[in-house]
Amino acid sequence: MLSSIHNLREITRLCLMGEQLDHELSCWLGTSLLEFLERRCLTIDKAFGLEFPRGGIPWWMEEAIRKRDTALRQLAERHFAGHSLSARSREIRILSCRYAATAWRHDRRYGEMPERYAGTPNEHLWQAFQSGAAMPLSERQLRNILIC
Image: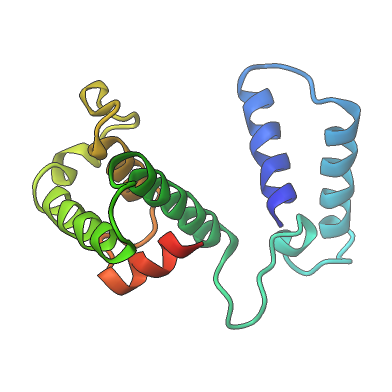
């Protein structure tokens, strides 16, 4: 599924820039559309390889969760490396609750991270919140994310 998402993002990027698709992407796109148009796949999600298992989470939410978790792991590594797992989880929980109550209300409307956040914990918090996945998280959820 991740390769399908990557392909779609690359096709989108190339189209928006007015560039041609390479042969491999063009064939993948044509084949996927043909699968849908000839009704060999009942949904466009299935034709593009984006169908999620019954009871599973949609591809876009899985992608959002991956982005959020990566940002949270980077926050822990860069700003709380010397702390225990429990301490890192607790500190990130406190920071994310504070960020949610103050800065995120304003930052959510920006398409890009404010420059003043570069190199600070808010850089990673902005990325985690911007992902679209649930934030803030409990300490227990944070511990599970940071273990991986």
